[in-house]
Image (tube, rainbow, N blue to C red; front, side, top):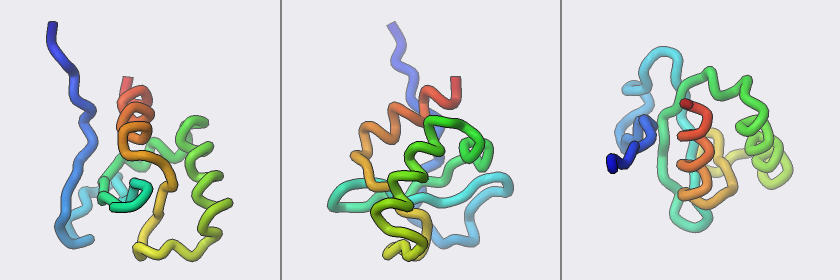
Amino acid sequence: MAIRMPRIIKKSVTSGDVPKGHFVVYVGENQKKRYVIPISFLSQPLFQDLLGQAEDEFGFDHPMGGLTIPCREDIFIDLTSRLRN
């Protein structure tokens, strides 16, 4: 049985390396990790729920300089893998 890994682009490089049609989010509770994800996720109701949580917690002042999603990394990976299917 094969294990499918989500096709999230995870990088720790400069913002100039974000491919067209993608954007950066920071995810995690304590240690934030940088993920580059497709812009198409913005229209998905599950992802919009995460954006609502981010707005409730941070408003429009995100401490990492980019969109910060306040959830555990494993939950984020699970959600984004569902959005890709």
